[in-house]
Image (cartoon, rainbow, N blue to C red):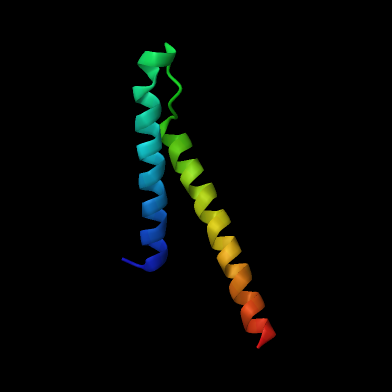
Length: 66
């Protein structure tokens, strides 16, 4: 598995874990505050894209400065 894919899968796993915690809070809160599967994927994709963009920008600046 490529490094990029592995990083995305880690972020997706964290989003799924967060959603499970939100589902557990449903009893305390009295209503469902969890995300749909689509929203989980969208959140993971957005976080991954943001991290990847920052890393790419840093790489470009580092290469450009050399």
